[in-house]
Image (cartoon, rainbow, N blue to C red; front, side):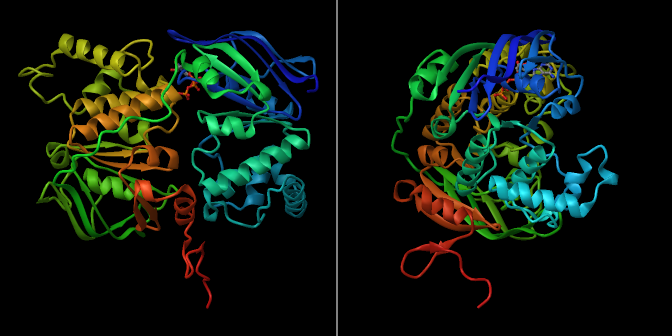
Length: 514
Ligand SMILES: Nc1ncnc2c1ncn2[C@@H]1O[C@H](COP(=O)(O)OP(=O)(O)OP(=O)(O)O)[C@@H](O)[C@H]1O
């Protein structure tokens, strides 16, 4: 491997009450794909944000090709060839691909659209990232939008591409395409750093891996030394189960029944198209699907947050179509939404108040006039300890927690309500292996106690590990339903992408014309 392109030395970054990076050294070489692993809150995003010029370190240095640089802003990092692609894309949806590229340049107004288009095409050809420069970004699939983000970074001259959990929103097929593109880029001399929690991605892609734990580097392995158990121990300091023991489900009465439900999405179009499903007590129904195929609408209909236009919703034998959220909560329905900070938690409230959001009216939480402060604090402290939520204090606003810790907090609050029916959307997204195992075991324990669970996820491995039945959501309908032990990943992946089983048993698309 060549001399390091980037040398980060002694990087320290603190936030009030937290040392996010504690004297971290990291080398990144040209032509390598470098994976950054670590527990939730171990400091991966902070370290990469320092490298991308989003945060200034308290101390430490960054050298590029041996020359020390100080980044006062992301623009400085971009000018030094460092581009970061965030999980939430930063594209202007109504604009075309070309217009988005032009906007990213400070001299954008002076650029020739024709020249920019030609460059997009040339870059696309060079790196195998074909995108139509005239396409409106809002009309592109998630995988295509990600390609535009990568192209934009390359267009800006990035030689180091940082990707924060890049596969979190992709189908298996899109993930394969992304991996091929990243390998192409590395072969052309770029360096790729990707943050991930998924071991199979590390094995598939990484030339080297750096593991962070508690803000420090706990280990670094070359491709030839890769070993899952060793990586897991470096991450969480212990072994983690790869399979769970599952008791046979004592399936009970019907907990949830949706009958030909039509509901509109936020644009007033049909988000759910005559969707029907049933879940029984003690059963996990796993729903796979690419985000945007009705997941949000379905979850919100069940949680009482979205109106049904046609069809009916029944919970434990009682029709509850278009009942309010409070009525659903009263019937034991719990909801762990995809949007943790926007819907699940109140970002500016502190951790204690967020934990109380669903229970503050209950007599054990409040007296006649006032909240039982001390008792609530003791309960909250116990809950965060039990669920290993890393925090500086219960009085810290939740928006300052890392992604994984937000999820743990949300799940802790919902599980404390002892739900009878639970809708969980992408429960392990962004969680480290240890936390994922903890969440999965909690879901299985709830199932064993008779809770009916609708598990909405894009992670097929997760679905196949946990679900009793698997459905695939496509275009607001269930495109297929199987017993979990009778379906394979390829079939689900095809259905997620809109393929169907053709005559002769093969999966494929039905031609649109004729
Ligand atoms: N802006 C901020 N203000 C206060 N604390 C922060 C801020 N950003 C991060 N932290 C804290 O710094 C620590 C490291 O967070 P960081 O997001 O870097 O971890 P991570 O390894 O990327 O976690 P995850 O895998 O959960 O995304 C966490 O304890 C987090 O709560």
